[in-house]
Image 1 (cartoon, rainbow, N blue to C red):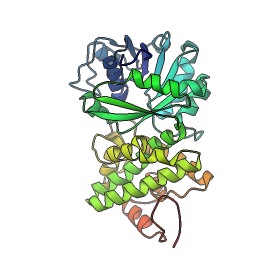
Image 2 (image 1 turned 180 degrees about the vertical axis):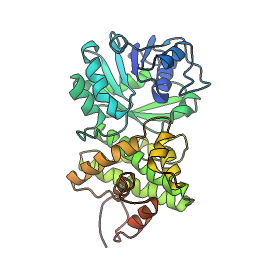
Image 3 (image 1 turned 90 degrees about the vertical axis):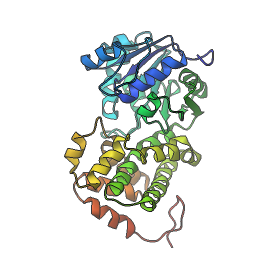
Length: 344
């Protein structure tokens, strides 16, 4: 470990690209044992053979990373439980694991999104479904495209928790020469940034797929950041969070790379593909589609204007076309620049 207080026994729930990558990071940071849990026995076997070709072909995994299909066995005895499943799977997974999680273990969420049925952020889902106190929960967000991290491209991230000491300990657990964690106590800001940037990425991907240029992408990124900041601050977040790695940092990465499932789905739709076919071609869950409606509902409940998010919702729900999206956004009333709404 890079510091004495890092977690030694880590369980990662989820064998997708991000879960597998993070398990590799933690192993490189010095964890004594890393157990990855997944439902797919074939993927588990691949991981135990030293690679996950289903999600990270060509990436060698350390020998300290082992995989299992036994959920309770995976979390039993773990000092840190890492949740790397899609948002819709967080609640059932944590309910099933709850009785085996050590009472003193920390829980770290890698998931980014809002639960459709409850409009809850992931830290709230974990607390409710597993009976874990908020001061034992941390969330991770930042410009973290899994393939690039697996290839050890240098990057940074944010670990946020109400418990600063927990955030620092988690940061120690995943600090490597290529993965640099910062810490924060702004959990709601980090959660909202991570969820909303996925929706903005769908819109930007669509614009790119239509052949629109850098001016359009920059406009959508900037106004998307304004939407993220308005919603976050209305819910109690620090606006400075959105100027950092979890905000603009993650937004730039997600909206600039075909490695992003959200950007890629939007790109395919911008080229003329229907939503269902675009989803079928995605290698995993597209959280920007799954979270768009609950984010919009959260915004409406807080009295927050989120026009890009609303446009994405209308497109994915079939009430508007990709072409309609541009008209909806460009025909809006004039405002002062900035993240606050001031009409002129």
